[in-house]
Image (cartoon, rainbow, N blue to C red; front, side, top):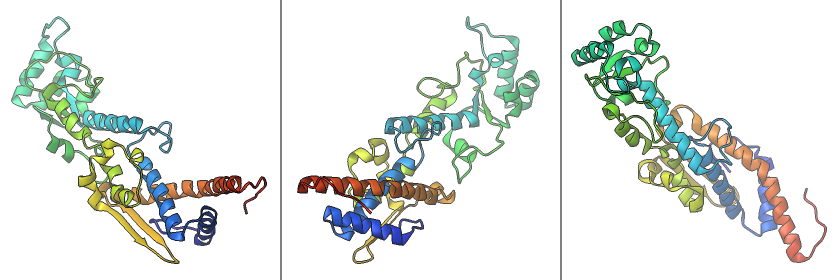
Length: 296
């Protein structure tokens, strides 16, 4: 059995043969069944998931989906710094526009980031920004991210987004995503809709192995057309039955994440295979009316 990771083949062969014997299945059927369980775990252990606490195998898919959307929000707000989230650049709660905010708005209209920085010497966030834009857009966002990880490049200072008029203050992070200022909410919705593509890289193999629908939620399955073409699946029958599976989504491959995910999933399957054999033996003994049995 090969799934992009090294195994103690003798150990696995013995365990799989035991399982085949006790379940009355062929080796081909057992190998496919174990591969299906490994792919199930690979889907859960492929981002997104909540990292604290790190329990991707038991975490609900709804929590994983939310973790993905939270990651998108974090990335967007690392790249874009909306002017309406800075007190010094906004009007107060009564709509009064301070002189500093008006001066900054005029500078933004001219595209003068240096002047905005001069007006806000104490704002570390503004001082770190490296560019000034009127609107947030997907191309600028993508250009600011590392191609391998998909995250904003390390040390990236951010882009100040200012429409050129004094905005009303609003927190950058909202309950549903991010502020609607300067197209940020629209960008968030577009990027959040892509959450699940990395998991969908396993779909071709999952479908070929007959993985139940409950083990692959709709927000992942909707990306089948985008990602399943990069999935790998091959089955070889016979004495040396084997399944070869993989996830070819570019950033999963580029970071070496696929191999780590598969190795972790296989370790989990190795731990649980003995339990599965014991449960199968117990069920068989019960059917046969045997009260005492043991495993080796």
